[in-house]
View: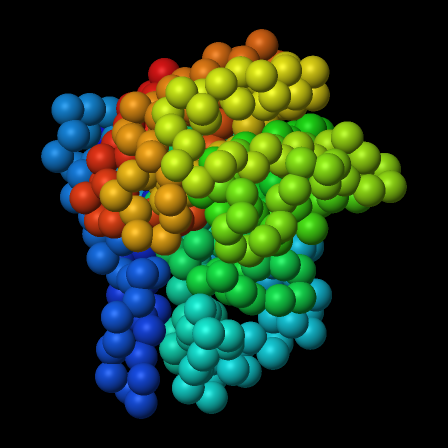
Amino acid sequence: MNPTDAPLLVLLDPADAEHRATDGGRPVPHAERPERTRAVEAALRRSAFADRLAFAGAPAAERAQLEAVHPGAFLDALERHCARGGGWIDPDTFATTASFEVARRAAGAAVLATRAVLDGRASAAFAACRPPGHHAESDRAMGFCLVNGVAAAAQDAIASGRAERVFVFDFDVHHGNGTQAIFEARADVFYASLHQGACFPGTGAADERGRGAGIGATLNRPLAPGSNDADWLAAFEREVAPALAAFAPDLLLFSAGFDGHAADPLAACELDAHTYFELTRRALEVARPSTGGRVASVLEGGYDLDALGECACAHAEALLG
């Protein structure tokens, strides 16, 4: 299938295997591992709707696309760190000699997914790449994240004139502190997050509503540990759906983390694949009057491989609409 004719364009980076946690050059166990994207790809390829998917490689983000959300000095420091052999940036976040380029391709996939949808070259798109990005602040890599792909995609959509108002819906179980910080003073990007409260990174309180011109364009709904499908869907209907309808974006972006699944080792919620199908379907339905169905998704967390594959398939099925 030609990617430009795809109901759903899926972007992958086989070379992300070069981004793996090591100690003295030896691989060590880490939740954020290359097997994650292999599990997503395998599940999508064996899905009942595989014939409606087009797979393509991930291009590296242009320097200007990264500098639109990250200072050049930060990018230079990260690139030098990797060129010197990498190593641990913080107790959670690692880099290898290849990690800067792998992160560039993950961000590039997010940008390409968004452009493909806005230019009418794909009906919807899913950047199923790693490392994740939503914890990366403008000048800080953290929480497994090196650069912020969904932020680069949202900013590129606006800067290129392809969109004027972008709604980012983040349903990763961990709050996307980086994406929020990058846009919290902006009125043209709305950031909405459903996430587990009292959980890494410790941000995302309900009273964080933006600042300056962006007051009211940030929405956080922390949910209790142990919260389930009904709790998350009720929070969406009660808070996210009205905000999405009122904001009337011309582009919907998902920060798609699947680590709220009951099997995930890094959180304590009780979600299943149905939750992610419904969150996606309902958001698309609410946004459709203003977006015309223009939607792209960027993979964030999800660390149990079986659950990740199952949930990514449910999300993709809903994206097919």
